[in-house]
Image (tube, rainbow, N blue to C red):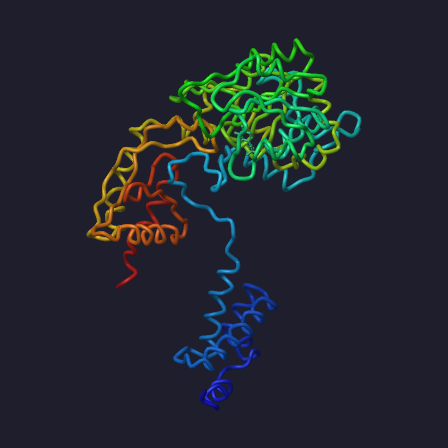
Length: 472
Ligand SMILES: *Cc1c(COP(=O)(O)O)cnc(C)c1O
């Protein structure tokens, strides 16, 4: 401890007021407001005082020097926490990166709904109170063939509401092969506990037969449930009871059959170069009394949960008091209506709906893009690394079609030497530190940037280019 060194620095440090009154301080106040700047200056001076006492000298402690530090602190603080990124992970519907990106039509609809009062629950015919779900109910009926529809926060909420409405205090029968867990916090047995319905598991993990269900149905049965095994597939010696059979069983015993489709696409994905996935229309045609699915998975819209099916059963869900806690706000209803309307023109869906556009991109499109970007990528990556274009497989994501991948092309970089892990982490960190962070994927000692979801090539290119003119 050197008594006096701290004190002498404290004397040399400018006062809060001097920094605030300086030219730089006044400019900052005009930009960020008096309170934010004086808070920043106080914090910065306290930090300098402490650093000096700890013996770290050699910093610019003029009023301008202090103001410059405060400026970068304020800028960091003002930057949005949720930032735009480039999703080059190869997973189109990446849950951690916000799943589906919305079509332009939805973005415009949301902006208008934010800016003005709307007829959210107001009927212009006579000025009576309307129902918020009416804005999409007709559309959903038209597109899916369902008798009725009810909208909630997400598909997890849809499942909860169906169970709580139709099987509370009673039993729900599910195959052991379909007791799913999705993305950490959605676990079917847990949701059932919350909905206060008793889980009755039937069959074995790999095989469940009609007789297993038949034997389990009794006076306490509230629902028969089928859940899409979204993020896994049971292969080998397997047997599953089809939706058609479950629907027939339900009818025979007077028990509703609920099909949790998970992703729930409205179109035949084989038209877009993917494997055909059961559609919502299929599930209804197969005889499900209730079907639930997500808004932001294959549908390509905002986060939402759909409950569709038989009128009485859907209305009962809508009337449940729990619906009030799970309902959609005006912004998501606006986005959903605009997204669903695009489905009226299926021929142009691959242009109008970004999710489908990404799925439908042919391999050559990504390969061409990678070839255009390769020189800039090469210059960005350390000179002794190997770089090039690799064949890769994009994933659908969000647990949809887990085994189905789409052929794609990626820029790759492989470091030399034997400390590859550290080197790859360093490059990933550099990419994440760009103005628009770039999120890639590390696979077998390579950093890969899958081109499938790179739509703004110009913005990507601009930030990767070496800073010319900066070092005159
Ligand atoms: C994704 C999924 C859910 C949860 O849907 P969210 O919209 O994410 O809440 C539920 N069930 C199945 C089968 C799913 O695939």
